[in-house]
Length: 100
Image 1 (cartoon, rainbow, N blue to C red):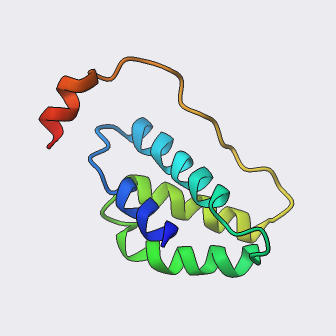
Image 2: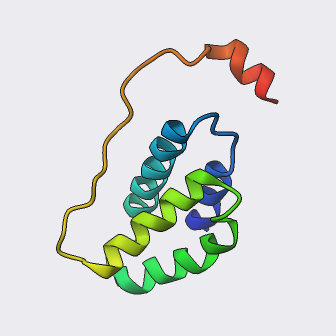
């Protein structure tokens, strides 16, 4: 269920490729933090990739999420390039209301 929720959040309007990258990384971190303690990572990552792959071509943030999953499966001992977004103003409540 967490995977579906993460994908829904990633399918929002991203605005720019840089923002899509940020959202994809945040989605990956959210998905990873939501895994159960005893979950087998490769199985969970393949399952998430199977759910996300149909949306990869149309949603750039989902594409970034898929790229991170593939990179983690291909070379599990290599650190991923993940970063929290730099704080900046994005328009506040007015922009959230306009997005609806």
